[in-house]
Amino acid sequence: MIYYDRVSKIYADNSVALEDVSFSVEPGEFISVVGHSGAGKTTLVKMLLAEERPTTGSVFFESINVHEIPLSKVGDLRRKIGTVFQDFRLLPNKTAYENIAFAMEAAGRAEAEIRSDVPHVLELVDLGDKMNNFPNELSGGEQQRVAIARAIVNQPDVIVADEPTGNLDPVNTFEVVQILKKINDLGTTILLTTHNKGVIDNLKKRVITMDRGKVIRDDKEGKYIL
Amino acid sequence: MKWLTTKRIFRAGLLSFSRNAFVSFASVLVMTVTLFTVGITLFAGVILGSALQELRNKADVNVYFTQDAPEDRMLELKASLEALPEVAKVEYLSRDEALAQFRERHKNDQLTLSALDELGDNPLGAVLNVKAKDISQYESIAAFLKDQQSASTGGASIIDKINFYDAQHRAALERLQYITDSAKVLAEWIVAILILTTLAISFNTLRLAIYSSRDEIQVMRLVGAGSFYIRAPFMVEGVLYGLVAGLVTLLIFYPLTWWLGGATGNFFGGVNIFTYYMSHFFYFFLIIIGTGVLLGAVASFLAVRRYLKI
Image 1 (cartoon, chains in turn orange, purple):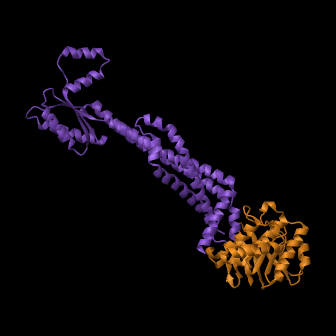
Image 2 (cartoon, chains in turn purple, blue):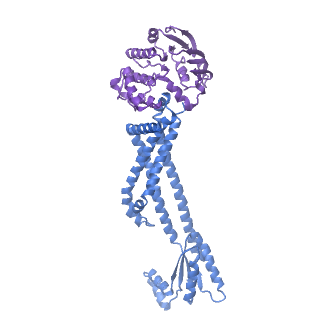
């Protein structure tokens, strides 16, 4: 489903973000990418979303080379991939409801669908009573749950969560990971990057370990080993 | 589908306009200053134009006839002058009228008047006062008169003097033309610089307003929104700024022109800008609102573009 083929990223100042990275992700998998800050986890995610281009190598999503997609069609790719970020990235001038509705509107969904689906996903992340609150009226954990609701509302094939628990306390971290597991149980592929040892050790799923831009381990039921 | 998208775009633009109240207020304010400047230059153009026209109207050429010139020949010359395409107006002043005018002009100058009385007879000839349509045309009118003068040298010429050939009068005419031409060019430059500067300021304000939304634009991009769907609400917002600023400007001009109308009416050139504003309101409406709307749309379109490149 996702295939990184010998991907390297070298910036203009010769710093190496990724070096010869290859691995694939099967449909329905829950895969975690771990490593210290600067190991190249976020660059990996940005490659999949066509936010960054590799210096060499290719990234395929459903057999399509994502870097051959023209800028005008990149939106189609991104609508198939739900994204969750460490800093939540909600639209500050829109309510929780409107943030989620925006992702559906961008996908051209009908008003009736939006009216029925948005409250439903908000219930799913346990925020049914906060749908009219603006992001600055929500706690970090609540904002991240809105972001997850936004990521899943268009029923994407894969969810990419880049350090989703980085700004959260242990209780909220646990909740967010539980939600991601639930989504995975329903059949959605999850690509999670984190440097939270507790999260990884409890998941008991596939773990790719990165260090200084290289993949150094790929374990089927991995632990956080660094 | 198209209708649904359009509805969503307008709703998003309107919501953003009302929710970012401070940014909207600041943008409208700066744009109002811009549109006000545009309006002021329109008024200044009208006042300056009419003042310059008034000034140019002061220019003339006088043809002084000999004292014994027969009236029918003078009127004949007047008719042939009037037939010239360059000539705007010809006024005939008989000997008596010339004398009366001379007395009127020197009524406070006893010495001149008593010298005139001493002469007993009317020493003045009749006069033709010629006004051209443009200052530059006096040269050819004077040439025509000179031809007339020399053509009749067989008999006695009825023309005594053409003041265009007075060095002083000619210099004054040239100077008048130079001043009015330079004033026009200078005014055009000042207007161009003023309008460009204020447009640039407005443009930059909108860019800054959108700069503050750059993260938002990136998020929209990352959740898969298309360029047009992201850009259009910002353009709606920009157009709204222009529309509101335009209406505010038109509203401000109402009491302002009313207050200044009397003063400008008495000014050289005599245009009452309140009357002018009222009679040309549709023209002002089109220019001011049009500039505002266009500026808002174009500035937003360009400002968003740079953040869409991911």
